[in-house]
Amino acid sequence: NLLDGMRTYNRIFREATLMDAEIIRLSDATETLALNAIQAYIDVIRHRNIVTASRRNVSAHNRIAMQVADQVDAGKLSEADRFRANDKLLAAQLALAEAEGQLGDANSHFALIIGSRPSPNMSSNFHTHVPPSRSAMEAAAVSNSLQMKLADNDIQVQTYQGQIDNADWKPRLDAFASASVGRDRDGSSGPEDKIGAGLRLNWTLYKGGTRKATNARNKDLLMRAHYRKKQVESEVRDFARRAWNAYHSAQERKNLLDRSVSTNVRIVEAFRQEF
Figure 1 (cartoon, one colour):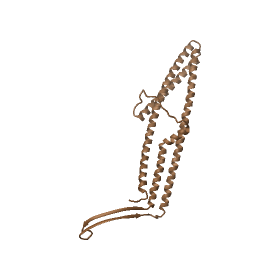
Figure 2 (cartoon, rainbow, N blue to C red):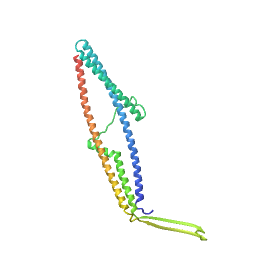
Figure 3 (cartoon, rainbow, N blue to C red):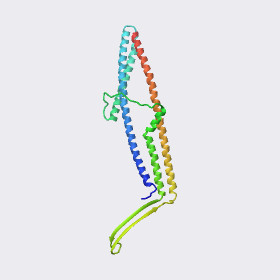
Figure 4 (cartoon, one colour):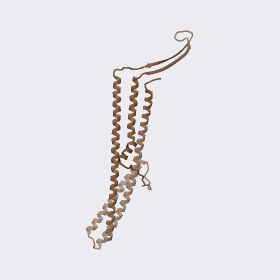
């Protein structure tokens, strides 16, 4: 095969690109599994912290309820204060029961994903590297997205396929050679040796409008691949923006909750000093 309109070249690269696509899909599945494992790990740590805080909360409300009861018995507070204190204690106990149930669910999900129960000494030191801005986060998300790589891969595959189809309309030149040695062949007697070599040229010039239809189909498929890439990019950027907003919203909520905790601590201290 001396000349085939780059058919072999494009076919090799098309097959290589398809293989790359399978590798990307495997990486995507692996990444998804890793993210599920990370989420399961974080959920266990988070619910353990919630249970620990809930237990401290129950202990604190229990002490307050006992102090209120002493003040009621001493005639310094009314029975309504005792009821309110007991109600707060019951609410804290209910929150603890719910937290322990959620921790049990998190432990079960962890065992499903990881294959073993979570250990009691899991580290809670997480290293985060948040991009400096929302635009930087969007750029990083697009650059690292395996779905974007798959979309690029689909464009390359369709481009190579179009070149393969175009090769049908280009001249094809084949070289051949043959040799035979023998005697008494094909009805003749005596020795008969043959040696041959030559070139064969094939060139399809017209095939009933097939070329136009094939080109139109390939152009449409290539346009769809480009559209799919733009769609994937829009989805990735949207996800990155929402993740950025959620992260900063969580930071703001944390700051407000820290202030609320500090305020409640001062209220408790003031209550103890008063009574």
